[in-house]
Length: 451
Image (tube, rainbow, N blue to C red; front, side, top):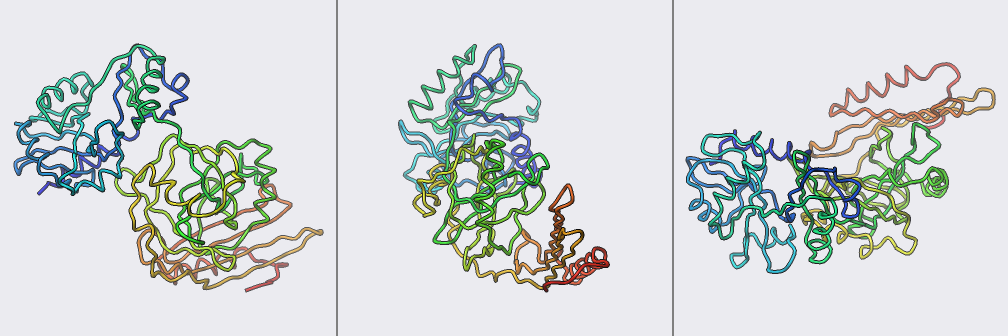
């Protein structure tokens, strides 16, 4: 059994290392890679992060959560190669001659004894009582090469040294563009580590929008987008705020506002206000540097929502992904909101997404417990305050049981639209928040127009 302190080391490594890699698109090598005296280049393997742990109980192959990879031939080979206790880091992947590696091939074939599963080792945390966490790469590489020089299915990362960004670009064209490898890992001499991959493009369905670019609530800030799981059912993927011109942030609003619909869920935007949901009719092209399906310690989960009777309802939280540095490229008027054009294949062609995303949940729809809307008119200007309280019927810790939501609209104010959200798992507490807020806000002149 793996000790708890080892599991903590694995999780910490995943968290700390993620920030050390700078994502760069293949067409940005000459502009985004820092100028260094020299660079070391290796091919990026597409598998799962794997730790080779040798302790008093034996050898273990683990992911960053301490869960085992069960491959006897790899464990036996590790026992032969390692004669001291230690923790080494690599990528476990499914090997196919002259084909690029893909993470979903690993998942599919890990338990298939006829498949070829290998580990490429690229880091060392500790070995034989010595910590290598602060050691220079050359020192680490020398030890890794020595330990795995006789490895068959476990081997040291192979690097070449180049002296210019032009050389990196050439290697990228040879390995990635021509041979369809996933990407490059480039270590700058005494500098950062770059993860270079081709630019990724996706077609997503637009689910909502938010205002507040540069704190101007007359300008579009972000679009909320997702993929279609089945008819009228969508998985939220992310939001995009880059790539719009100022003219677009104004001109696109009218078309989006005409598609507004109600929703029983709150999805926060970058302007700290909830997204306004729209009918699922528009498709956008989004470009990104990378796509990930987990954070440092858990898989990414986002909302699955259903569009019915001109309203969205949340079904559940399911595995999803996040895009690294997404950029809006434009609307795809030639695309329709159908599963073959904005469906799961947008994700699974690149990265594993667990099948449970297609499963429906028995969770009941959210239910509005209280609603009060007030208006007041002064000098011909109408102001509105809306207060909502609903029960989410969530059975998981990923979502609160109760939500209070306030909208305050005043056209004569600089910040015309103000919103506030409070959550609680205690019904008495959230009801007091609801009543206290109304008592504080609603004074002389306000009229209750709906409840």
